[in-house]
Length: 607
Image (cartoon, rainbow, N blue to C red; front, top):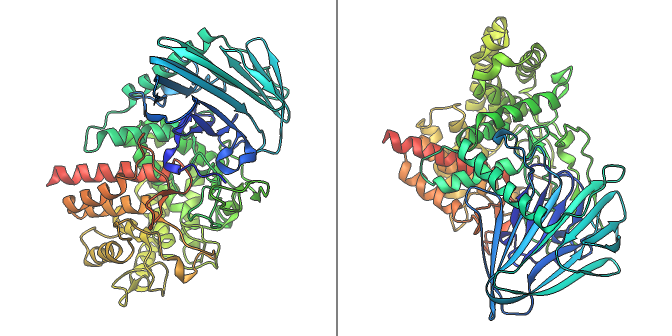
């Protein structure tokens, strides 16, 4: 059973694919050549899915780690009874000097360098790749300078500066390092039928590692200017969003993993290696604060290209593959036991063909945030955005699966109605840029009709709050967005009551916010889930908008303390144990952190 705590993972990315490495020097997840490709190392989800570790032999070994300043280059320091060794590793970004194109020339190479800095340390390396989520047990052949991997559609070459021994489908090496000694390893990937991966010399691998450090530092220096509270966390979160973006298209994935559960041992295990329209509006603001407009424009361009359809009224797809793919059919991998026996392990995501009418609002909200750049969009995109507004005006009356993609019966979720209001409100604001002035009066009438319907049917006197769906008394953290998107003034009495109700009745003992209570069965799934870090940051943001800056800071701190030692956040927190749950690292959590920090900085400035 895979038991590595989620908080022990660190992310490596070349903006094409990703790796997750634990505190003990083991690669627990590695997917080539795209984020959503089958893993070549997937031990995080099952012992049959492979591993690759580099670490000192014997015990005890103490480790501490960090990202080198301004980078996604990971440095892990191992302290042993005989000496100290430092493991430095990264997904190589290539040598393109343009800071706007980091990862463009990525060679699909994971570089790992280990060096003894004090005394002497014996290092062991074990390499057991298992392509296609562990379905392929490959043949390994020893060659000068490393190992060639044969099997499946993945072509892999392991370069090693030390002699390795191949036994069946594994390769291993043990070497004693004295102070100043170093050894370097690199795993190079290509697809069957493409250019052959090759053996890299130690000098080449070290130069590539240095170039990757420089690329990340240059990007950070050029793009990260936020100077408000929690600056280091905001900058770190901005780099995480950059690391989760697919360089060739601008898509941003929700997380680097699949099937890390929302409840240990439960069925709430989903594949998050895709790009959601739902996230777009929140992501735009976060990119603006913690990265740069270039990434925001690229993400918007990806979404409008991938989502474009002749008739939006028949539905707008809610999520896409990183290359813009629409068919994300879900299947299970029964040969994998899952993280801590959390089954099933899923790839693909069945929510891709759900109906969610909120997406019109998120897309037009994103367009509104980028309004200064809309002069450059083409007529086809303008027409598509107009059609999205028209679709929102028609479809707002429909029941849907809502922002949380419930797998229960469709309902009239309040958040979906509010986001249709956002779609029309933002369309009115940018009608001139869209060449749709003649639609404004009709959009305004429908916008106002939605507004009144939400006030009449979304408020519960019993709950003394806006609730999850029309006619319900259940709370839902997504209703914090009524203040954040401007549906109501943050200081409206009903808004203040809703914020207080969520803070009081939709939180655990630590003050972290649930999305909703699962006991009511709204999502059609068995079991429970953890508290949701994004929703806790939403609470902090909403409080900041009401002018309660100090209270907002307290709530922000509750969520931010769940960053792991290298500043990464998961999706959820177990309400009993306090451990991290869900796919990792979670873009939504980092987006929430950035936007809440910005709101608090603005509120503090007004105080």
